[in-house]
Image 1 (cartoon, rainbow, N blue to C red):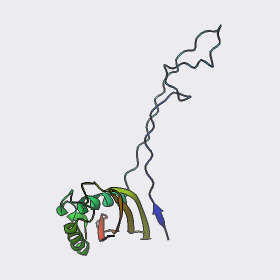
Image 2: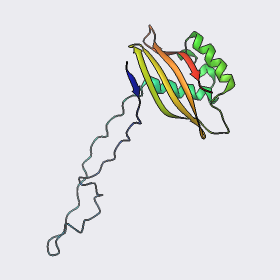
Image 3: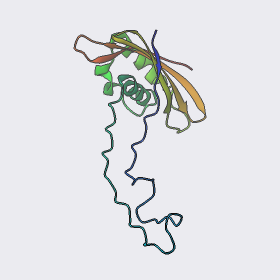
Image 4: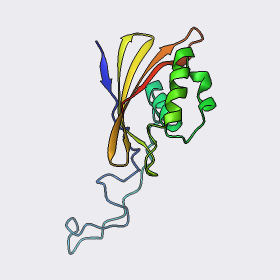
Length: 156
């Protein structure tokens, strides 16, 4: 059984000279009173590592949150949803379970379980203002090698 919790992505680091100080700052502790003044440290440019592409579970969670909060229409995700899940999502979208008092919903945590190599069962905690709500859905890899949502549930 493989259960995975996704972690926030690390922010890209900015390039700094060795020692972590800006090049214009001089450290008075290292200079001698009679010796020459230290020279500025040259900045070496290190490439910022490329971010890995987002996991399919993160992409679908964001899309479902936008539809269930009323920020996007149903047809925006229609091609990514399978038959019975589309009907369930349409019913849930009418209720707008993630729409409250003008607060935009945000995804707090996403985790997934992979019962089969071509299936993810995903669970997410969604914050709508001061409340936390649950969102669960299943992703299945289709014959065309594209991920489709095959089940959707929300906690009320």
